Amino acid sequence: MVSVDASAIELTDSQLAVLVELLTIYSSRGSDPVKGKEIAEAIDRNPGTIRTQMQSLKSLQLVKGIPGPKGGYEPTARAYEVVDLERSEEISPVPLSVGGEPMRGVTATELDLINLHHPDRREAEVYVQGSIQRLSEGQTVTVGPTPASGLVVTGVVDGVDASENVCILDVESMRFESAEKRG
Image (cartoon, rainbow, N blue to C red):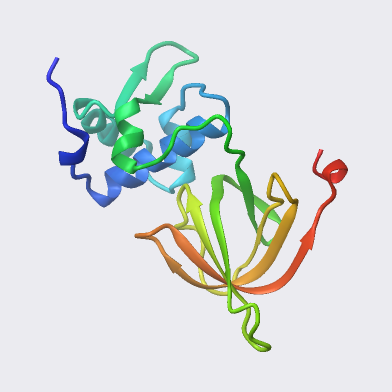
């Protein structure tokens, strides 16, 4: 087997989108194999395209195929290195919803509140794990509750940077949910 240096791997935008979505779905549901069809639906691509991308990701040793009816794809440790994600069982996903509907396979990894002292402009930068291609300016997005404090931030999307997987929210409200309500 040929070894691939993770720091030398350069992925196309399409390969990166597929790999990030695989990592997101895989880690959000307890490490069960992910079907190509799930990835295709999540990033709005053709399942055939996903199969082709998975073959190239397998050749780069970023993905392994799991055969059988409960099979699918699993990321390798190298996939996390290439995408520069920490594998941590301690990190709890922070949900995102658009217009009150949860975004499946998309979680917030960081929330930076900026300009909160400004009387007319309160903004938040939301760093996202998963595909943010479905987000666009003008949509109402809710982030949270966060695991530790129960913070819930709601705002209107003011901008999206897909290359950095970040969106800027014009914050409309912030509140805290009690631990009992969070379940």
